[in-house]
Picture (tube, one colour):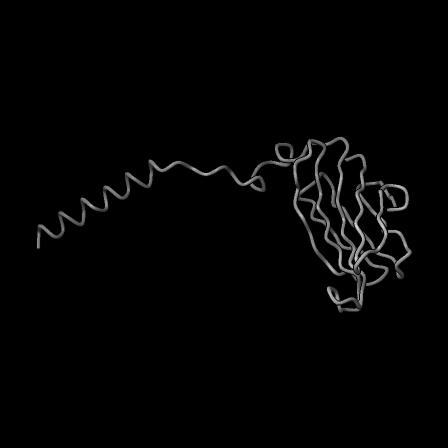
Length: 145
């Protein structure tokens, strides 16, 4: 019985040593302070707007996929939402200095609206916007962040 306890103790000690000596992974950027993971200046976002009532988006609302990048080009994350027509989706403040809201219009031709800190912009002036193709349109936008 004592030999089983001694062997078990030796195995646990060895496992503990191996685990503590294992290389650590890269820290999660979300765990870093805001000033370490977000670089202010000229931020950009890539947006895919899916039309409503289409095969890839059969619901009554537009669906947005928003990829946000800080001034150094680092990806700050992606959010996907289906805001009600005329409403917005809020992109968490954790990714940037202030929260970013992207609002859809009521019809396909309406520009998207952006709210960030005190800035208000529209896709018609802050973005390069493609035409709807296969039920979606792509746009690349920029603003001072």
